[in-house]
Amino acid sequence: MVRIMTSVNSVASLYPLVLLAMCWELVARSGLVPPIFLPAFSHVIAGLWEQFFSGDFTWPVLTSLYRAAIGFAIAMIVGVVVGFAMARWTVVNLLFEPLIAAGFPAPKIALLPIFILWFGIDNVSKILLVAFVCVFPFIVAAHGSAMMVSRAQIWAAEAMNTSHLALFWNVIFPASLPSLMSGIRVAIPHALVATFAAEMIAGGGGLGGELVYAQRFFETTKVFEILLIMLMLGYVMDVAFLRLRSHVLRWHDQNDVTE
Amino acid sequence: MTRGLKTVGYLASLGLAVAIWDGLIRCGLANADLLPGPGAVFKSLVEQATTAEFRADLWETLFRSVLGLVIGAAVAVPLGVVMALSPAARGFFEPLVKASYSLPKISLIPLLILWFGIGTTTNVIAVVLSTLLPVLVYTYHGVESVPKVLLWSANAMGTGPREMVWRVRIPAALPSILIGIRVGLGLSFVIAIAAEMIASNRGIGKLIFVYGESGAYAPMFAAVTAVVIAAATIDIAFLRMSDYVLRWSDSHAVKR
Image (cartoon, rainbow over all chains, first blue to last red; front, top):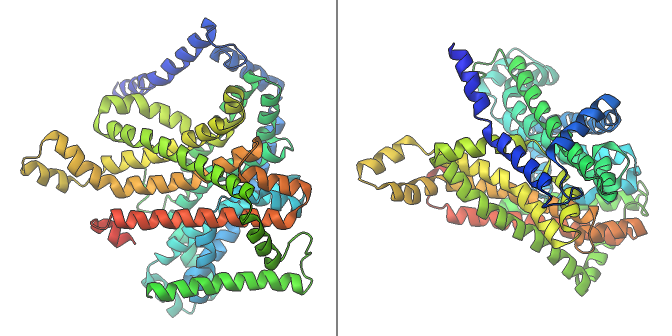
């Protein structure tokens, strides 16, 4: 009974969203704004439903996800290796820290034309831009979390004559996984933003490319449909990530405390 | 390490990176057509910096991003405070924030172009929309999680409800608010430049793109360098300002 009540309450708490949708629908239907600027909410949803079955958006969604995922994976590998190396060896830290301090606040999107020049206008330049954008949060998260691994654990492993590689893989990596996970959560939206931005600027399909085409041909309904898809993608990925995190970190005692 | 020594270390590391960049080209490992050497880029940067056009473009981009950030923060900070203080306001805005949080705000640029055309309005609104949520969330959490001890002691000293907000909650939340604004600062440049690259007639993003398309690579690298330097300078200036504003805060002093 209590459970039913709380779920009723949580549905009722979404009233502002319903209100927003109703206002949107009313303004669009009243004719105050021509549909070319604001199509009715119901039209957008109906269009989305249709597109879902006709599969028009399947390929753009997969293209964008492919670019984001590969770039993300490259950033994760490079970022974790560099971050751990910085935590382990002072020389590496001295070399990389200033570069990261200069690179972190830089608007990486400004480098897209350089990436296009080097790697062509197709997939590779976009993937590498995503990797370049995401690598900074990963380095910082990996460095910060490796620095926080307790000295005692490292000494214990060293006393047992553990090799460098085993030390990273069996001690530092698992011990820093909880805060690495927070870094991953920060990097996911960055990956999506970089992918969509690169596609909007350089074209070449994907959701960002489709969005700009729809805008150029004044297909406003399609613009809203794509925006809703992007919103849902971001949401689903965050929820999926939180699930994954609580699964991966089920051994960690702080797991229940952090959200 | 003292501050002076650290600066020397920083400059040495950046100098080393530039030397490697130069060495790659001199040894023929990198194609000078695709990667102009640091000398050529620096020369082009100096040449461009003296032209009024270049400065106007850079200024335009900085103006758009800072104006957008200021408007965004001017809306987000009061809203965050109100959300943290009033359960009704929180109940109303929280679902809206949560629902819009996962949309990459950069994707709204095409829609804004449809509504407002190409130009400063579209650009500034895009920056406002993308800086709004981070500042809002940091402000909300800052005001929400003020240590109970502070509230209790203020209460015990007979602090009224208004002073509680102005003299306890907001100052205590200031470190968090400033972090939110710094996050917004980083975003504001990205969005302003991306908007200029997608469709614009002015701004440094447009300039970089035009250079890239016309094959003027040394000026393109120079313009990108100018953007990186400008962004880093503003970020450092903001950090210094935060340090000064928060010089009384012990939690901030510990973190640094």
